[in-house]
Image 1 (cartoon, helix red, strand yellow):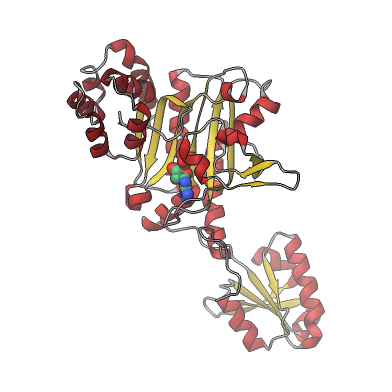
Image 2: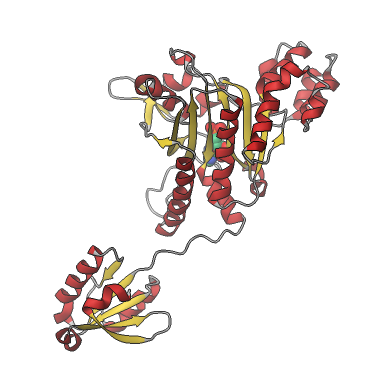
Length: 408
Ligand code: AMP
C-alpha cells in the first residue's frame, strides 16, 4: 500500500494499457474523420452555470464543482456537448454548415464507481450543427454505429426512437408526473411506470406502445403524420447500411433532448452496457444563442475497451523495439551514437543505460520483448560491423553498420 493512493473512481493506465487505448482511439478518430468530422478541444474546467442551466437533476448532483480563488464557481466537465455548444456560440457560428465537430476528452462525474462506471472517464463524441434533414440524422447515427464496428466490436446493438412520439404518448395519458415517467423509462423501470399510471385509462395501451419494436405497428398508436419523421430516418438508416432496432422507450436522461434519439449497447457488458447515447437536442437557445438544428452523440471510450476485452479482441501487438548492447565499458559511446543514428531513421531503440553485463542485458532485452539485440563489440566495430541477434530464434549474424537500417 502506498501512503497516498489515487482518488476513488479514478484509474492509472500502464504503458501496455495505453498502447491498447491509443490504438483504438486512433481507429475511431480515423472513422470520424472519414465522415467529415474535425476535432475540437475545450477546457477541462468550465463555468458551473454551463451545466446547471440546461440539464436534468442527475448531472448537477454528479458534477464536481468548486470555487476558484476569485470565488468563481467552476466545474470539471461532466460531458462535452454543452462545452462544444458554448464554443460554437463563441467562435464557430460563421463556419460553413453543416458543421461537423468531434472531441475526445476526460469527463468527471461524482457517481458510485463500479466496473464500467468511473469518476474520471473518457468520452468521444460528435456534434452535427446546421441540418435536421432525416438523412443528416441518419448519417450521424451511422457514424456512431460504424465507429464502434471499426473499433473492432462484433456485438453491438443500435436502438433508435423518437422523443416527440414518446412525450406525446405520455401526454395522451393525461398524467401530471410526465418527468417522473420519463425518468423511470430512462432507467427501464417499467414496473415503476405501471404503478404510476395504473389508474389512467390508456395505461395498457401506453405499456404496449413502450414495448413496440416494429415501425408498422406504431400506426396503431399514432397517425402517419406524427410518425413520418421517425419513419424517414429509419429508411435513411437502411440507405446508410446501418442495422437498427426501433425502440419507442428511449428516454435519454437530459432535458434538452428532443426528436430522434438513439443508444448503442454492448450486450456482453451486463449492467453498464451502454456504449453510446445521442440524438437531436436543443441547447443553443438555453445558452442564449440563435436556434440552429443540432444533434450529436457521446461514446464511453472506457466501455469500448472493456467490451473489446470481453469479446476476446486481439489487440495489435506492441511496436517492436531494438536493444543496443555494448560489449564492455569501452564501447558505450559507440553504442549510443549508433542508437542516435537509428532513432533518426525512425527505429525504436533502447540502449543500455544500466552498465549491465552482456548476460543481464540480453535478459532485459528478452523481458521488454525486443525483436533484435545489436551487440557492439570492439573487433566488429573496427571492421564496420555489429552482431545482430534475433531474440526469438537466437540466431546471430554479422551485419555492416551501413546496412543495419535496411536489415531492421
Ligand atoms: P451520457 O453523456 O450520460 O449520455 O453518456 C454517454 C456515454 O458515456 C455512456 O453511454 C457511457 O458509455 C459513458 N459513460 C457515462 N458515464 C460514465 C461513467 N461514469 N464511467 C464510464 N463511462 C461513462
